[in-house]
Length: 542
Ligand code: ADP
Image 1 (cartoon, rainbow, N blue to C red):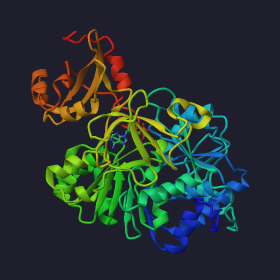
Image 2 (image 1 turned 90 degrees about the vertical axis):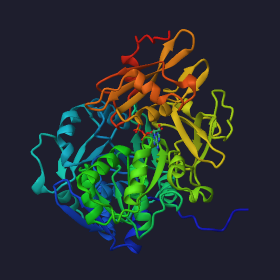
Image 3 (image 1 turned 180 degrees about the vertical axis):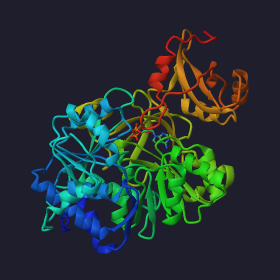
Image 4 (image 1 turned 30 degrees about the horizontal axis):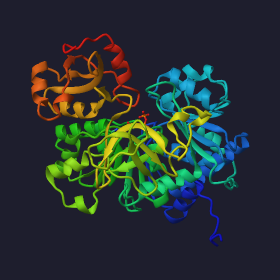
């Protein structure tokens, strides 16, 4: 027997319909690319998103078409997203931090038909456009007065393009499993892989993200999504925000400490989300200026492991709660968040920071397990680490074009490529990427743990641990270190500092000092390149 409840497809444009009706006057504030702060509302965004949809429809774009966006976080980018989804097309966020050749590869793989582009990225687009044949319209997110000179064909200014419609459009309707958005993983190994979100997965993810023990969002919040819409959907905030009617503050292209502080302060932001490097810049700015954060209530920090010092400073000096989070493009992206279950809620000081160093537990809608190489499930004892696998309604079940199928199994588990352990309370902690873990004598050594320990040394600016071939053990750890300016720690200083803080057999066999460690476009240590740099390295122990 079937239930007798209504079919109400979970379509993304319903989010902006709801925001306009229930929270119509709620503001969206943007630092515009042209410069000034611009204010709009959900009601206005809704009207303009409908015009985007109508205009796209009139230009012949529709169901299933991939429409690229190469843009910062602004209200216009949000309007473009909802307009694109509202005709059944697919917003495809491009990460401008990738190498131009990678962007070309991604656009050709996706066969993008049109592109919304910020003024900032016109020079980049001009450089690559010739190599992408599928694009037949370029919409520059500005008005006629700010349009740059360009030799590109089929270019229009967004505002004038929007003015050409009469606002008599209604959203298209389709199945909730229709594709809504697309984002490529940055491809630190091999070619980038396309993830294709559906309307249903986006709506469910928005609900999951907003839940009290996830980001805990409400209509009373003012949210500053520093994490870009092109980096895994701004972690869902472009959808959760309208869903719950929060005020949004969009930072545009300025993410330095002073600019972020200005928005936090003048717009009285209560909630924000970004990667650790952004928060490092902000904390440095606060220390230099002596400024405080009287309005900010909590910050989500993820994308890479959040250093303990950041959490300690936010909570100890500024009374801002830190929520450490883990996720990935393939998970829309949220996987786990480190909020406090009742057993941990009373913890203070170092005991609380110990828990907050973990990536946390998943909200309803994400299942996880850790397995060994033979797919045998490992115990939740907070020690035994293995491959982290996940499944849920906002987790990818395949990559675009069917590549990478070995990461998905018949039971629906997706192998994240991360290595982790889970404690008896269900809190997960990432210990490595599977391809980075060091396998010494058949046992695994966590490079992240070695790196976290090494950077706790006061003279170390950055550290990376990699496996070096060893005739007896298979692999042994080498610690690659960048010294802080003006400091001269020796190999012995660093090893003595680490001694006793990790198992003896985890201790690096050697320390190599370098001027710089290579990073990916999203700021992660590029271990593949580093391993190549040290491919001929001989350990003194071998
Ligand atoms: P990329 O940044 O490479 O474009 P993602 O944003 O999808 O792609 O990166 C996901 C990966 O980032 C995860 O699989 C994990 O390795 C790493 N990551 C994300 N959050 C954390 C975290 N809080 N701690 C440690 N690693 C993290």
